[in-house]
Length: 297
Image 1 (tube, rainbow, N blue to C red):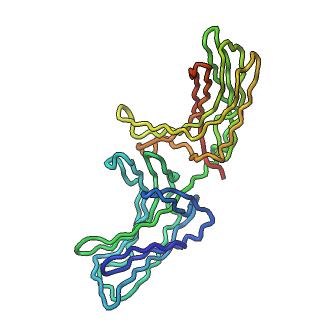
Image 2 (image 1 turned 90 degrees about the vertical axis):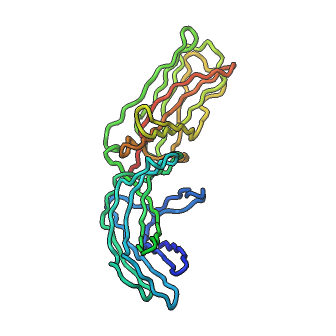
Image 3 (image 1 turned 180 degrees about the vertical axis):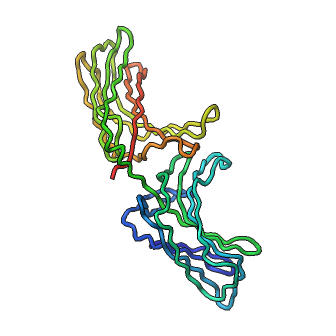
């Protein structure tokens, strides 16, 4: 159970949500502090209690009290593009006068979980509860955030296909590499191999990087943010003709999310495997391949 309190000059306004969840997710808030959010998925309901705490010998005139469940996409560098993609509400009390502390139970049954929560560098997709007390001079508000996870069983059920690409420099270098799968769950292992057919340049090392690509907007106004999540050295030194180098990279230790495709027309999140060769003159040769990442049950 989480309990949050906001202090005002005449009231103490608290929101207590009975989460009773075994799953939690850690995220960074606006102050860059880690906070723990309860996780909801599938047909989960969300319920709890709203507490209004008054100072003694005070009465509160209000124009109504309401609780809302909101899903919102926030574009961090352009708030004008931010918008709600879902909103539902319940009236807790009509206009009146509060003379004492009061509690209100609430419940949203099997609320729609269209998208998974996402917290990136340039965009956030977040869910939260908001309680509003309307008053003549303004509003008193309190928010409690939670996370949503989407299990994609259809990705698990589909047959896999391998990804095979060639890299070459005429009369200098010829190789191909193969990833044995094109779709990976969040705790999966990327496996594959690199085959060297011609090597006439001195290679210092070869590495594999995982890149997260956030794309905000579309068309000519689209903005892209690339973030290298991890680099893993596959080979140290120059390979010989005919050599085969295995690929094995664990995703479970990486801060990775599912792939997002054109969410509400606002943003996409893609994951790229970048195979990089570096020669003795520090020239870099690379080949990128997009993969699909999903959450399995």
